[in-house]
Each structure stands twice: as structure tokens, then as C-alpha cells.
Length: 323
Image (cartoon, rainbow, N blue to C red; front, side, top):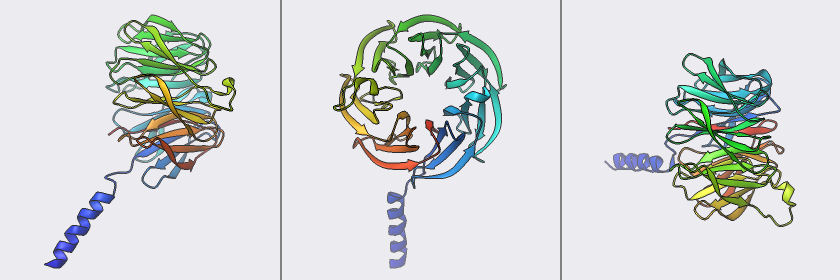
């Protein structure tokens, strides 16, 4: 009898200390033309996948079966099978695709093509390009409003956030922001749109209904010149309380009170921090560091860096499958 109780106790203990499942991250390495696969249980790279030339934007499909990666110098989106971890197909895009966004149903993919100033629309089921939207010069940042009705594209040289109606596929508003906007992110309740301006050194807070700037987040790191602080990637917690902003060659991630928009902390990470992604349970935030060729792991609640993982050359984007 005692053995039965002992076995039961061990099983319960193992269930308490063992993760239900390890989350898997995929990192695009722009210079080595690879994608690194990271096991977040062991915090190690488990596989390196060879892809096309200059991979940057990367994201899981909505069903979690495939990983899409924009290979800019090959002018296409490659498709990685998440089960076999092999490239199995490709999707069309315009010249030099960089970032992209999917609708909630996983039917359409919207791709920013840096070299021809368009956003391409790709039917994911048919795997064909079904349209193009003319936007500003050097389009990059891409995100959809939580209700899926508005697509946001940022154009680096035009210095605008373009509001695109997904039903009509027409630009319905343009908001001028600071120099070289790189990334856009909605709060999950749709109350705000954040747009990072790399050269301007700010993050603009935009009212998505009125489509006007209501405030700006600026940064000040003692010992660093202002021009070295270059905001790029943005992550906002689901509760809308905390924002994280990658500051490029400043080698820091800014922690921001997302209500007051005040910077509360700077976290020292690797060199030239670029993009980021939360684990699906939002316990950790992983950020890519392009020059040091690694990924920093941030404990979200403790707001501290706990781990560094070596990946390929010039890591750029990162994604997780959502449960």
C-alpha cells in the first residue's frame, strides 16, 4: 500500500515541477540565411534550418502548422513545416518582403515589400497573390487592429503610419510620425497604437479612432548619445499594463508603464536589440540581438534578463506558435 502512495506522490510532484509543454521559438538569422529553433524548456537551440537569402519577418500561421519567413533577397515568403522543421513551400510577394501580418482567420497575408512601396495581399489557402496596395516609401511595419478591420503599415522614408481598410483595401488615413518608423503594435483592447521611430528616437502613441498622436515615449540613458537610442521592436502585455521597447544599438530594452507611458526601467541585453516575442504564457520575453548573434530571455514579472542563447548571424525576427 505504501508503495502505491509513494508512486502517487511522485507523480503529483512531477506534474507540479514539469512544464506541461515546452514552447518552441523560431528566430530568423538575416546574415547566415538560417532559422534557429529554440526549446524554451531547456533554453537551447535544437535545430538550425537553412532558408533563402536574408530572412527577416517571421511568424507562425494561425493554425500553428507552419512558420512563414520573408526571405527578402529571394523576393518570396518561405514556408517551414513545424512538424518536420523543413522548408516545404513558398508564397509569392513583391520585391524585398520584410514584415507581414495575417488576418485572424489565417486566410490572408499582408506583406510589406520594401523595394516597390507596396503591400501585397496573399491568399494563404490558394497560395497566390491577389492584390497590391500602394503605400509610402520603404514600407516595413505591419499589424492588424484586433477587430481585423484596419491594417497598419509604416513607411520608413515617408515617415507615416498608413491606415488601410481591409474590406476596401484602400488607405483611409495617414499619420505623420517621427523619422524612420519601423514597427507598429496595438494594445489588445484597441485603445492605442504604438509606432516606433528608429531615427526619431521615439514611440508615438496614436488614437486609432481619431487617428491622431496623443503622446510620445522618449528615452534617456545616461552615458549614451541620443542618436544611439533607436527604438524598433515593441511588445505590450495582454493586460495592457506594461510595454517593452527594443532600443537597437543602445543594447537595452525599455520597460514602460503602458498607462502613463513613462519609462520605468532599462534592461541591458545583447548588442543591437531588434525584435521580440512573448512566450504564449507571457512569462518570458525573448529579444533578438543582431550584432552579438544571440537572444536574451527576459523574465516578464521580475523584469530582468535571466538567460542568453547563441543563435545564427544577425538574428532579426522571432515568433512562437500560439496555443
